[in-house]
Image 1 (cartoon, rainbow, N blue to C red):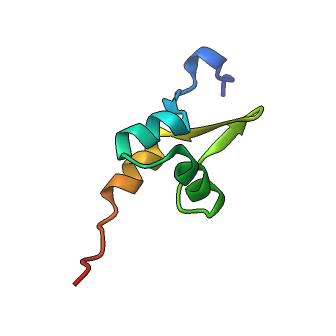
Image 2 (cartoon, rainbow, N blue to C red; image 1 turned 180 degrees about the vertical axis):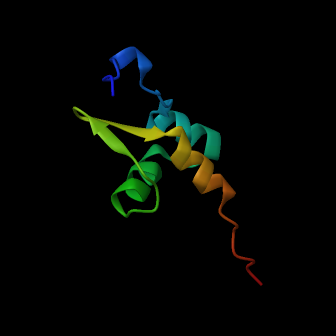
Length: 68
């Protein structure tokens, strides 16, 4: 089987915690805390956190418990 080159690999969009925080209307520190607590998938590139688009889709698809 021929080996795939870098240009043939699928690339997923990723976002900075600041961008995710603005979209969800929460502080950026909350996003980083969610990553550290395992509630949100993320990865580091050097010192910078990135959140893959698939993790955001999972997060937004999760139903919120009804608080009564």
